[in-house]
Length: 154
Image 1 (cartoon, rainbow, N blue to C red):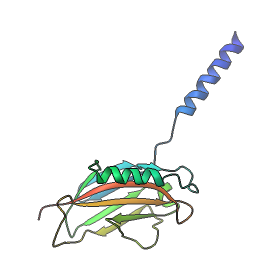
Image 2 (cartoon, one colour):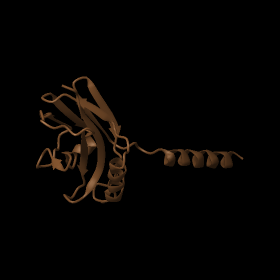
Image 3 (cartoon, rainbow, N blue to C red):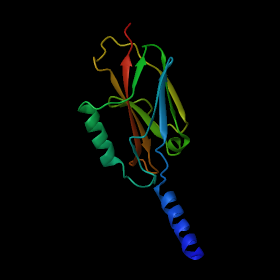
Image 4 (cartoon, rainbow, N blue to C red):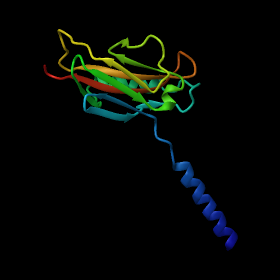
């Protein structure tokens, strides 16, 4: 009886540990007093495996089709900051607005900031900011976050 109870407790404890999953790493985007934090929409726990490519394409397609993303109101001429968890910075990451990278080389620190430009024409639906985490090889995407940047009315 004692041996059966011990085995049952060990089995239940093992199942409980197997059910615990570490949450995806996070990123925070801020401008002024407005900030949004979210976990990666896609994340590969192994930086050597390109397991997020299909997930990233699905997430982007859903977003383009009207999906929701955290919204940051930005004032042109003010600073926009991005902070990522250390695990994201390990292999580097890129902030991307539209199709343009804001850094030509991978960022390996947990923080990046830039001045949001003053533009003559602002799209009615704002801008899309993607944070793309690299894997251990340059052609591997490890993770993806999407935010909507909505310029404040002047």
